[in-house]
Image (tube, rainbow, N blue to C red; front, side, top):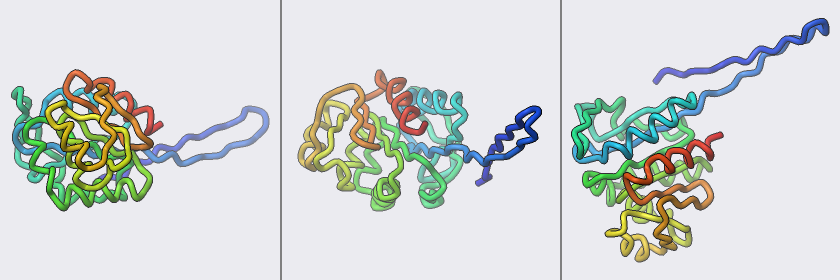
Length: 192
């Protein structure tokens, strides 16, 4: 993965003061299922983040073309096994029917646990918050999910709120495609 660093140079006219400050570009990885991710839950937050100058990497179990529920075709940049949490400021699990493949996936759990251990931002939308709950990350936390899966969050000790978007510390959960824009904006706010 290419490392991008932006340098800010400031010169004060007449005073002769010149200095450069290194500013690290924020990076996010969005994890999708290879089949059946929810198109707008990937594309809307991705657009919001990229328009704000944040680098977005898409990961899946394969780098072969992934297909969304509404027909979007995406070529993931990396596989889940290639995701190094140290390289990212946030991890986002995208929903859609295919997201259930990560509910009990040890690698997905480890990625989510590591991002929280590093005090970085973790997001999940639609049915994907079940992955976070099963990884033990929502116990005692306010969270939301697609309503059909509320029971799974509650069984894992989450404080289910039923809101469109819920933010508890650096964990952001959202209920589904209609919340995709607000979800992306909330992630962006936490990254600034």
